[in-house]
Length: 302
Length: 249
Image (cartoon, rainbow over all chains, first blue to last red; front, side, top):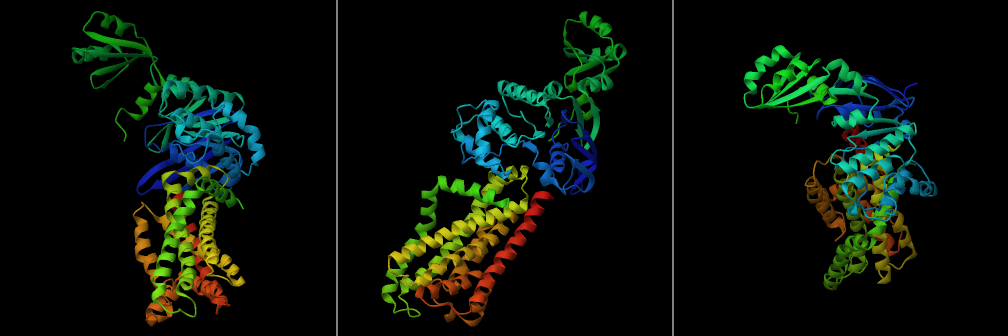
């Protein structure tokens, strides 16, 4: 039984396929990440799955309900954390939750009963009467997360939940999201932070130009697409060294004044570098970011 | 009945800002009513058997209702839809864009009704509306509010920016106020101009309210009510059509 199943999803704006033949199958309790550069179609995919935007082709089933036909019924059991904050600026913290609860048909008393727990979860205990303009960016994000939990959803959609937050705020959100997975909730999030995806997600899909180009666990994606060792080299004379390096390693990539050397066995490369003090280097294990850059390229997207 | 949650959200915001909101909706019409009513009224004999200020109070009731409904559905509605993204947040819940459109229209009509009712109360205090029939202007004010809220919301869901509304205000609402019998009897207008007025909703609001304020039963009640209802219903349907296009495309 899937929590979300999408098949052959397609959405076209003007002459551009924003979402192109996307299939998704997400199991209960899973934390699933949708990774991609800006404009890859991540947000549109989420909106299609929620029934907020209608697809040009494809089938969607969300919590057993066909979408968009019965999206309203499905959304009764879903929470959403949007990319851009849309809390009600005229309301206090508590009023934001009360009013949002009403949209789900939850009575004032029922919300009031859940209020303390939600505020604790959001790290906003004692702030129920605070006005929105007195909250920091991190607090607003946490309040948005609490708001998405008002109906005790089975499934949470989160569009870039930590974009724009400082490291402290980001770590707190990560800790809370892990708590939610432990409680058995299913999480679907979009991000372009590899670290976030690697830490939180059981499974990921990398999306580019409307298509899913790779799906798997973070480890499996790294093992499948990239050599286990990466050596980043820069410094005077790296261009001459490039020619030698081609014979020492499986794959090289040049970005500006840095060479990325990908190797199954780093020893020959490191031995060669140790004789060249003018070159500086960093040796590290391959990460999801390397997979991402290999699959989506190093060109800027904006 | 999910739309009631949208209405209640707007009501809660209004309740927090009630004094500023009521003052801004009433200051203009009341200044105009007493300024023109007493100033100009002193120069005029009775109009249609009423003092000019009583005649003008009936017109003001309708025009204030129209302006409140239009401002709320357009400027405040656009701010909620476009600026604050409140509509986006509501759509995460089990509500649809149709619920939001319905909630916004009924809300703007409610706020407009309050403007109309307050003008009526002020007029009554000054002895300008003494007949028990004036109570019937209250449902009329709500109907006028619904008609203009629905039309205003069409503009809102079509708008790309704030400037869009000035066309509607300048090219439609201001001339409509001039020809619909608010300031002077519309019947003295040239035939074709009167025809235009009769095709628009404000004229029919005034045609119902003014006799009631004067203390007698209006003529052709069914026609006037039907025109206002038609504007409300058609406006609602068109607003929903464009709202769906804007949000789900």
